[in-house]
Amino acid sequence: MFKSTVTGPSPSHFRELEHQIREKAERALLEASHEAGRRATGRIRNAMSGAGLGRLGNAVDATSDLEKGGRLHRSSIREVSASSAIHLKSRNERTVGAIEAYTRGAAIRPRDARWLWIPSPELQRRVKGGARLTPGSWQSSGLAQRIGPLVKIPGRHAGEVLLIVPAVTVRQEGRPSPRRLPKSGKARAGRTLRENFIAFTGIRSTSRQARVDPHKIIDGVRAELPALIAAQLEK
Image 1 (spheres, rainbow, N blue to C red):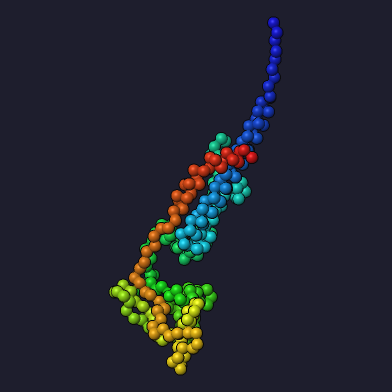
Image 2: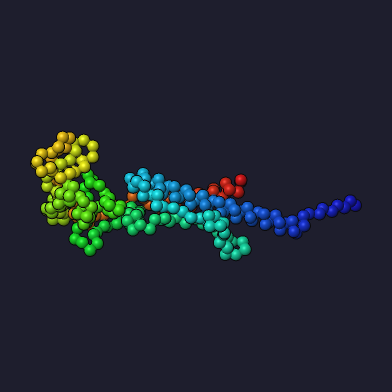
């Protein structure tokens, strides 16, 4: 009778192989979750830009466990997880409020005031120090001297008032650049007279409809995770 003996790898070799497989799988999990965070951030930013929100999406960012040193979350020796967190990197109150309004929808009302003042698009939006232009900063910013004092008049209905500047001149071409009418009472060359220049429109409240759904975008990226993990394992 012919006998043969087959000697397989030792238990230590199997343990080493298991260790190598686990390390590769865990690294793939970290890399895939990191890539998922980058994808979600990029898609949210693109969606905000496509919705006409300009650079507001630049305030959205992601942080992953890979970036935090590559540490996994372990619930047991065989159960691990890795993640990316989508967050806002800006703490500016207006930026945070705008993002909340355009991703959730919001009703906007003035704080401690009767009217919500909207400056004319023909005016500069920022004044000295980068502060937002408001009726309260009109005098201190020098606009009262350059353009003229504000006068309140009724709007088109009971829920609207206007702040105008009588007798203002604006450029005939390009940006209007409103200026006070010269003492001569005549507009200079290249400028024309506006009898009543609307500087601010006051309203009781306004609303913003949600334009971007970040949760839907994140769910879409989450569905791609198995493919992302598989791609990392193939490397």
